[in-house]
Image 1 (cartoon, rainbow, N blue to C red):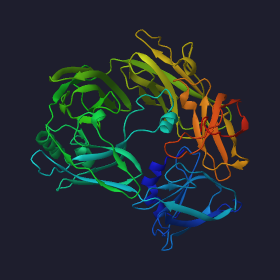
Image 2 (image 1 turned 90 degrees about the horizontal axis):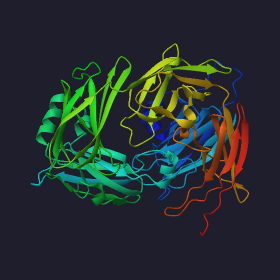
Image 3 (image 1 turned 90 degrees about the vertical axis):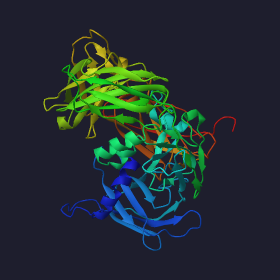
Amino acid sequence: MYTLFATLILLPVLLGAASGQADKSQDKAPPPCRVSGRVVSALDGAPLKSSRVALVQEETKSHPKVFAATTDSDGHFDIKNVIAGRYQFFAQHVGYVDQQYRAKGTGEGAVLALQPGQEITDVLFRLIRAGVITGRIVDENGEPMAKILVSALRQPTAEEEEDEGKHRSHKERLRPEARTITDDRGEYRLYGLKPGDYYISASMSGAEMYLRVMAGDVFLEQALCSEYVPLYYPGVVAFDQAQPVAVRAGDEIAADFTMRRVPGVEVAGKVIGPDGKPAVNASITIESSQGGAGLPDDLRAQIDKGEFSFKNVPPGSYVIIARQYDEGKTWQARQRIEVGERKVNSLVLALGKGITISGHISFVGPGSPPSANRIYVYLSPTEESVDSTGGFARVGKDGSFQVLDISDGSYAVRVGISEGGWYAKSIRFGADDVLEKGLQIEAGSSGAPLEIVMSSATAQLEGSVIEDDKAVVAAQVRLRPDPETPYNESRGREATTDQNGHFSITDLAPGKYRVTAKLTAEPGLPAPKSEAQAVTLHEGDRQSVQLTPEEPKGQ
């Protein structure tokens, strides 16, 4: 499903194009659809002029069709010549929270399903005023500090953690919702925030990359501000001491910082390339290994003749990751460290010391195979103890690939493919079924190739969500493998019911699943959820289910 975030970035370009123009060369094309309505303020019903409204095609791997319009002085919009199909549908306006179709407040909305020639004329978006956090950042002498990177961060909800899968690591990691930098007065403004609790961080690190200033300015800023460590509001180093800022609709809240010099240490060392010489064209990062605790943002350092140095790192547990890219190949090294009160200056990260996994991908079933050079193979570690970030490789024209520099450990294998209609039928590493047991790498591992077979015989699951004999709009449907393991969880899928309470999930791998539906709940209350229903899909299947959410027991 095309993400809302990516769509918002593309909207200015898409609105400038001829949105929704039907292909006149297709004389027998189905009649187009039309969608119209209004965008108003949820507070007083006032029309919101110049709002952007867009329909984004669902169930597409890339280049979704987008139909968009801008509201007039009465808040009215009219999107014509829309091709029949299923769409993500939303409205946005400066100073307001984006809203999806038929959503309750800022929650998830419904898919809009359009039949050929259908016209919908009564859509109403009621946008909620966004929150704002402003503030001023000064040094210990009260002088304003410019070019400080300020972020509004939030913890993922229980629902978001569930969406990520129970085997996903670092669920507790804070998520940036807005970022900006301080001006010459030390002032900042974070806007467009949904109601909720936010943690505010201030950091010199990352600001220069955010600004994309010249390299000379980067070194100057690092040298002048090397004694200032990243802080959380109201001015603490550790996340567990930070105070959240509660933001309600339309709030503008002040959160000032005083940056202070906190004892930190230098973390330095060198990176050795695959040829045994000091690494060139390599990148290196240091990040907290504690998820939400520690650094609010990843730090970066320059590598000069293989040597690197991170300035003023606060005490804590970290992971240092070095990568080098060369002619489509990627080498990496990863090392865990504990930072205390003393300088760490003898680290050595050696690239190219891991195992190379060679493999081949093939296709079975009707239909033309996709272009191989648009396919990637990803290896993701499934254990926190694995000293690796995994790896990936682009598949060659002959279907072969190599994933370089893989450390010992357990990995899940996933195939990234830009075209729909395919699933991984089998993944084998020698005699091992990788979809069942994972890819187990250890010293002296077999040199057997990783064999991947993709099939076009996908399955489809559709159905409806019903409550009190009525269709449920905007219900969240989740499909999970049964049993779900770290090695097959990528086969899980999510869908949202449309205005008719219907959902459709395509391009599924055959197998056993459990499917549930959950409704949007009021803040602080458990959401009504259906009992998990078992489904077994075979090649080419098209099955249908009906789900009925129930109120949580004890409510």
